[in-house]
Amino acid sequence: MPNTNIDRETLRELADEGSETALDRLADLADTAGDFGELSELLDEGSLHAGFLLTRRAAAAGDLRELQRICDAGYDEARHELDRLLKAPADGHRD
Image 1: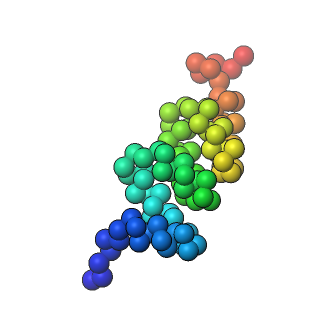
Image 2: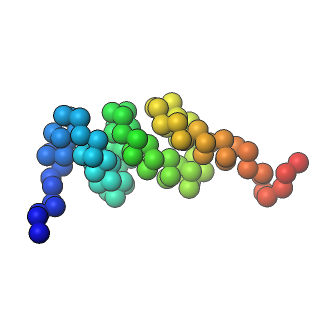
């Protein structure tokens, strides 16, 4: 069985050469480590997977500002979550 323990430096080099899979793997590692700064940087580099991971966390926390920031960084799916939270009835009641 091949060794699947790839170091971050190798992943970074591959990502810099255009490998989306390596960029996604870096995002997974950053998410596991709770490194939101790195996830944000990866989103800025164009990682849609980082955008997904950040959106999932922000939506679960109800963090509207973070969802807006993710939208502004180019991950359009965060807009759907932001809109969903904004349209949700307050305290379960719709006026």
